[in-house]
Image (cartoon, rainbow, N blue to C red; front, side, top):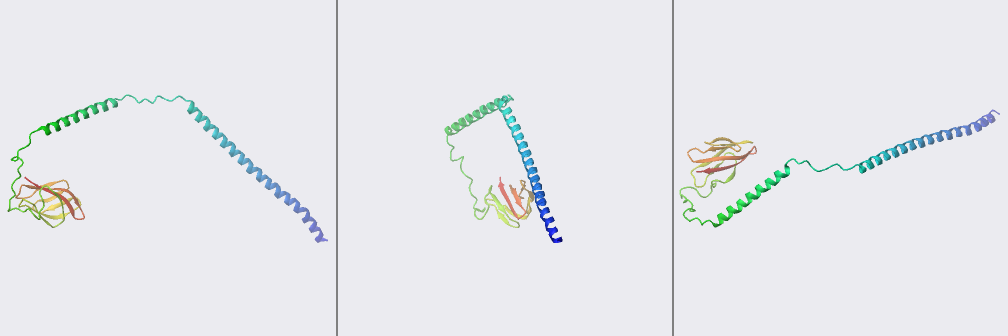
Length: 197
């Protein structure tokens, strides 16, 4: 009989539990729906504000976009006039040069080559060339010989001349020649030029 009473109690409690679970699920669904409605209303209000702002911008008159007159246009026109004057002057000089008489061959004669000075296996004067440490570079049509020493990241040293920094120059002793260093690299390369008068 006890067993029968337990079954009756369980049979009566189960529908109440099922109803309770159903009510909890219904409450959860209502809460979710209310949150969704609130978000939808907030989004609709934001869209309405944006629409109103866009309509206000479209209805507002455009501001005057003319730049202030600060003299730039006049300066550009003056620059254009100066360039046109320079170009016409160049054209006049080119015409004058073309109509100038030819130079006689005596004025264009080159200096004679001294057979006692080197002309092969040497560096031509006025030529930029690369140097490496501890090498000898004979110069064409000159008794000068360039001997390199240590090369750092911004200097090149020469025997008799000394150390020369990039974009610097030095005189080669007992000659009328100068050596100029264009660039130097710590890897042991330098770019130089020798000129003689």
